[in-house]
Image (cartoon, rainbow, N blue to C red; front, side, top):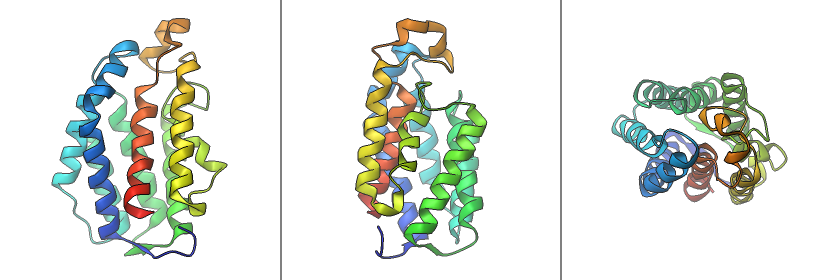
Length: 201
């Protein structure tokens, strides 16, 4: 991304559309992962929420688009995922501002603001076996250095959750029995970065 073309509102709509497509494609996988350590609803909840986002990709500025996506996720996704992903996009919107396009650095700043909001909302940190494990690794590998590298980092964070003991959410009730299971939230978060790599990279 460094030195590359600017990211427009239309580009961000493609990102959200690809994320929705990936969520739908992996809906059963996400549900199966959640069935092992949660409520077995992450796949269906996220699929429903992203379908609602794609059905209303309105907004003439980056902030307006991201805010709309965030509010839609909060209102249409059950469980913890709606508020968490909603907060991510709302903070992304605030950091991006009422602009028509972002450069690589501004996009990275907005993504980090989204992650900070998600961490603040969920009170999770690296090692808790959550979506933070997939997203936090991109602090060490800035998004502006390349979205393909960010995708690999997110995938590594997702994979690392298999060996972790869950310390947040319903999975935490299982204690040591959560070890050996990939976290569904980290899995969907890695898909968010994969979608960005595919459409914006």
